[in-house]
Image 1 (spheres, rainbow, N blue to C red):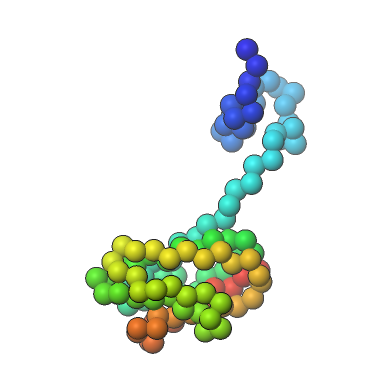
Image 2 (image 1 turned 45 degrees about the vertical axis):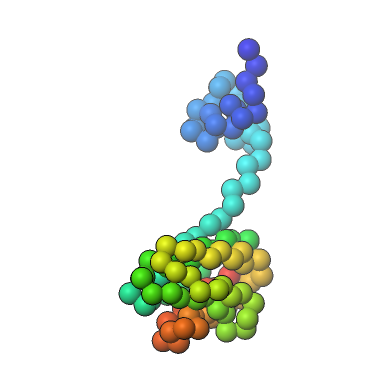
Length: 115
């Protein structure tokens, strides 16, 4: 019975080749989306400084019982008010330094550096 592309990919991800001659270069290309999370807790972003590669999606989740927002200084991204356990996601496609904060609580500031 032939091995399907999905079965082959799963075996390769586990480091199990279905036959000895199979090399990693023979495997189908797998595009893994980069994703990073930032927690909002105790009126702070954690981590406060984040470095990612272009194309990375960052998700902020509010763990506080108070609402918070995510708003970049240059207005390239902004969320509405996030209640407890709400999330906001943004994909960083362009390299640069993005400073952001909570517009409700201006003492909350952080930075994402995109390489």
